[in-house]
Length: 137
Image 1 (cartoon, rainbow, N blue to C red):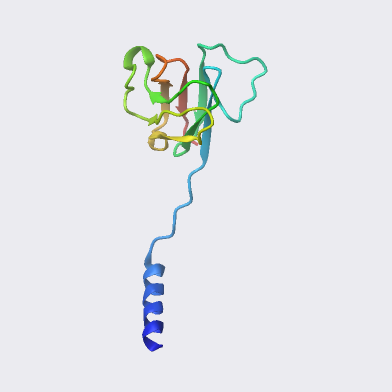
Image 2 (cartoon, rainbow, N blue to C red; image 1 turned 120 degrees about the vertical axis):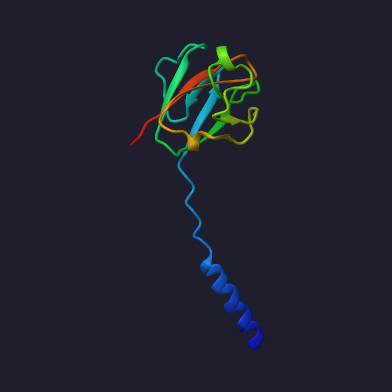
């Protein structure tokens, strides 16, 4: 019995020394719909054209995910499609995703400094495309 109490106290002490779990950063959802990228929070009275570059403003440190509602596979790769297709410029990217799958993270966005970052779909020669603007609070 004393041995069990000592083990429980030792484990409790170790757990107390562990750092507190950091809160998950806010999440921003980009939706691929009808060969366009749009923020999940936006409602367009007149949708942008298929080739429009939608601009999205975010504060630094925000985690971004991509949800695909299209019939085709999509991903997000940072860079200007005319200069960086199909591999991007390496600032951020997501895995490819299909309709019906859970949102996939867009890795790297949470580490961006303030500035403008174009992005595109590497599957379809830059259509859809957009710009993330990271703005300091």
